[in-house]
Every structure is written in structure tokens, then in C-alpha cells.
Length: 170
Image (cartoon, rainbow, N blue to C red; front, side, top):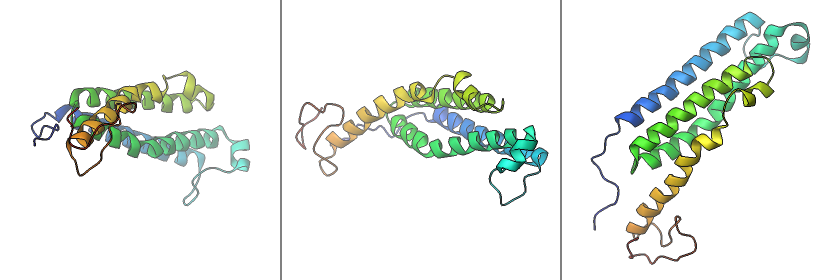
């Protein structure tokens, strides 16, 4: 039985989008380092404390830069996992969705760097709509892999109202 996942697919767009994630994280790390120096926050302190923030705008901006970077780091594993799953069947869609996510994180970071965390949400489109193609198509991709491999599982995630037997093709 052949697998629905084609081994010969072009992953160049996905690799380029993944490199954009690396560039995003590097830019955010440099931004955090710059703001850390300006605020005078020394290691191992992750954030400036309330006394430092009350006296200097640089400390507030450092905390905002740090939080935007931390929030991105919290989201990268799930976004990359969903992109990888989607890329097995739809590499162009996966690359486009990941690129859209990177652009939204840049806008999010720039909004956060205004010093008002509420601007992070106003200056960009939310990340959830950017990931909608990834989440909806990844479930379909996983269901195709699942339904074609009897050893992996017996039910399809794409069609929860219909039970699929282990050896039935979707």
C-alpha cells in the first residue's frame, strides 16, 4: 500500500519560511539585548523590576521587548510542528502560512516596543487567523496519514461524524 505522503515534494519554500523564523528570533534577541543595555538590567534578571520601571522608560521598553520575544519563543514549537505536518502534503500553503505568521510576529513585536502592550494587538493581525490554514489543513493531512496506515489509528480526524475502518481508504 502506498503512502499518501509523497517523498518527492519541493520543500524549498518551507525551508525559506523556516529561515525567516530564525531571522525573526535573531532580530528579537538583538532587540532584547539592545534594550537590556539601555535599561542597565544585568544578568541573570529576566525582567526589570518595578522600581527600575518607575524611574526609566528604557526599563519599560526592555520588559516589552523581552515579553514579545518570550511570547514568540512560547509559540514557535507548535507553529513549527503544525507547519511540518502541513508541509508533508501542502508545502506551498505551509510556507505561506508560516511566512504570514512571521510577518504578524514582526508587527506584534513592533507594537509591543511602543511601550504599551495593548498596541501589540492593535498594530497587527492576530496570529490565530494566520494559523487557520495550518491548523485546518494539518488535521486533514494527519487524517490521511492515519487512515492509510492501519497500525497508526482507526478513525479519521478530518471527518469526526463518520467512522472509518482501519483499512478503508478515504
